[in-house]
Structures are given as structure tokens and as C-alpha cells.
Image (cartoon, rainbow, N blue to C red; front, side):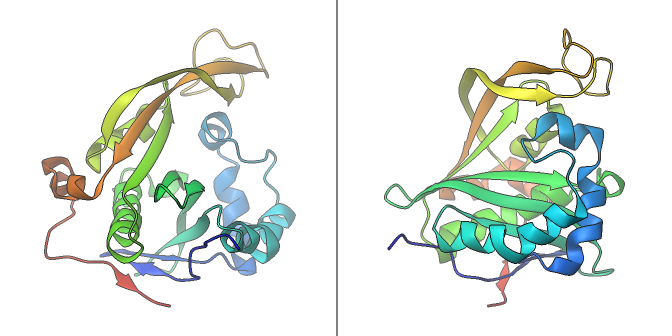
Length: 219
């Protein structure tokens, strides 16, 4: 039987990362309707409330139980409002390595929530689950995702050429040049890595991660 992550929640200074619930479906569908989410991710489009409920009810639990990864809803402690989604995928249990992807709601961008969530997951992976490597892959034109990777102390390891497909209409904010209206275009991916020793990097401290603050598990 494949190894798998436990069903758990992670608490950081401002955020609670927890399993998806079916009543997250309206907020999740609204979050994923954003043009930049459609362009830079491989999430289904349209991302309906029905799909969001199915993700919470069966798809995300199966993803965790089979050892492929885990999906977290990211919520604010103060308001309990859904501000993002974090997913671990392509987990290699022999290498103790996995890949992280993240989405932030339009209204919550610019608050530093994505770096805080990624760092909380990274610390949990390294300190609690014994992982040794976390990967981030960002499309070449997705500067916001690249800034998150830099803020958490990620190291750029190189470019995966023509390894992604970007969706959306020509002229859309953040769209790569040369895309045909309503179509898709290929994109390079920048590969970043984060190792346990990188958590003490100056970049991570500038992102608001301090050595005296630790995640709290809520199993």
C-alpha cells in the first residue's frame, strides 16, 4: 500500500490550512473563475460549484489516500474566509520529495498569504513528515508565482522548455505574447526547489517567517 499524508490541518500566524469541505464550493468556484487562475493553472475550466463539491467530497480525499499528495483550503484565522488553495502533487515517497502549487483569491492578493501558506506547508513537510525536497514550478510569464518562490527562499534550478500550456485570450492581463484569441500557447517552466536548510534563508525571513514561529498541527 502506498504511503500517504495524514488528514490534518496546519495553523500559521494568520492562516489555517485545512481539508476542503463541501460548503467551500461557492467560494472555491468564485476564486477559480479569475482569468489569471485560468491562464496559469491546469485546473478545470469552467470550475463549477458542482466540481468544487466533488473535489472536496471524493477527489481530494482520494488524492491523499493514494499517496499522490494532499489538498488544503487556506482560510484566514480572523474571518474564516477562504483565501486560497494549496496542493501537493507528484509525491515521491522514496525520495521524500513533492511539488507544491498554490492559488490566491483576487481580493486576497498582495497580503503575503501565498508565501505564508507555502512556508507553513514546507515546515510541516520537513519537520513533521521527514521530507527532504519541495519543488515549485512556475510558468515563465507568471511573475507573481515566481515572486512567491523567491520570497520563501526557493532556489531556481533551471528552465523546463515548452513544458506547460497557458490558457486564455490574447490581450488578457498576464497573458504571454503571441497567443491566439481564445486559444492556448506553450510556455517554459522555471523549476525551483526548497530544502530544509533553506527555511533559514534571508528571503524566508523577509517574507515574514521568523525562527520563533512554528506551525501548529490540528489532527
